[in-house]
Amino acid sequence: MPPNAPAGPLLLGYIFGLSLYGVLTVQIYIYHAAFPRDAALIKFLVYSVHMIETGKSILMAYDVYDIFVIGFADTAGLELMRHIWLTCCIVNGLITFIVQVLYAYRIKVLSTSYRYGFGIAFLSFLQLIGSVVAGVTGRMVGRLDTYSLLESVGYLVSKGGAALCDILIASLMTYYLLRMKERGPFVEDVLTRIIRLVVGAGTLTSFFSVMDIILHYTDARNGSSWAFRLIIGKFYSNSMMVVFNSRFSIRNNCYDYSSEPTWRSFQISTFPAFVCETDTVSHISFNHARGPDIRGGVGAGVPGLLKPSAILPDDEAILAS
Image (cartoon, rainbow, N blue to C red):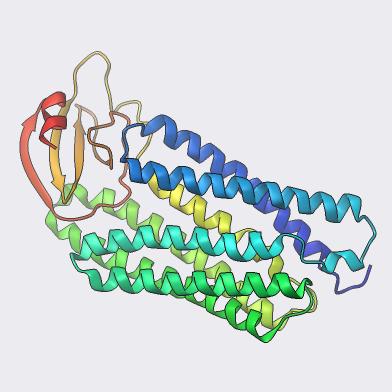
C-alpha cells in the first residue's frame, strides 16, 4: 500500500464516527424518556437531527464495506469520493448549522438583543453555504487526493466559519451566564455547570474544526484531515444532546417517595423553572417543558431573568407557568 494512502485516517474516522452514533442514540433515548413534555419545536429539532445522523451513518457503513471489504487491497480505490462529499461536507454543515442556530437563539434571549444572535446565525449560514459548495465540487472532482480551487475555498469558509461561531458562542454564553450569577447565590452552582458544558462543547468542536483546516493544508497527501472530518458532525449532534440532557440527573435524595415535594416556580423569560426542595438537597431544573420534572437537574438554556413567585403546589405551578 502506498505510504500516502488515506486508509488509516478513513478507518479511524469511520470507527469513531459510527461509535459516536451509538452514543447519540443512547442520548436520544434518555431525552425521549426524561422529557416527554418538551416543546414540539425542540422535539422536532432533536428527532430531525437523529434522523439525519441515521441516514449519514448508513452511508458511512456502506462506504466502509465498499472500501475495506469489496475493495480490499485496491489502493487506487481508497482515493474515490464515494458518499464522503455528502456525509462529510453537506450533512456535517447542516448539523453544525442547526446546533449553532439553537445556541444563537439562546444568546438572543440571554442578551435580550437580536444583534449577537443574528450575527452568529449569519456566520453559521455562511459555513453551511461553504459546506454545500465544497460537497458539490468534491462530488464533481470525484477523488479525495484532488481539490479544485472552489472546493478549497468552500472548505475554508465552512470550517473557519464553524470554528469562529463556536468561539463566539462559548464566549458570549459564558459572559451572559456569569452576569446572571449576580441575581442570586442559589443559581451559582447550576450556572457553573452550564458554563462548563457550553465552554467544553465549544472548545472541542472548534478544536476539531481548526485541526481539520491545518491538516487539510499541511498534510493533504496523506489525507489525515479525513479522520477529523468524518466525526466532527457527530460531536456537534452529541454536544447538543448533552446540553439538553444535562437537565436530567439521577439524584436519589432529590425526591423522597414517602413525602410530597414542594415546587417553587420561577419564571425565566418564556421558559419556566422549578426548584425541588427536600430536607437534604435543593437544586434547579431548567426545563423547556411546561411543567416540572421531579428528576430534573441542570438546565439547558437559562434564557432571561429570574423572577421569584409564590410557592405553589405542583398542579398550580404548572398552570401558573
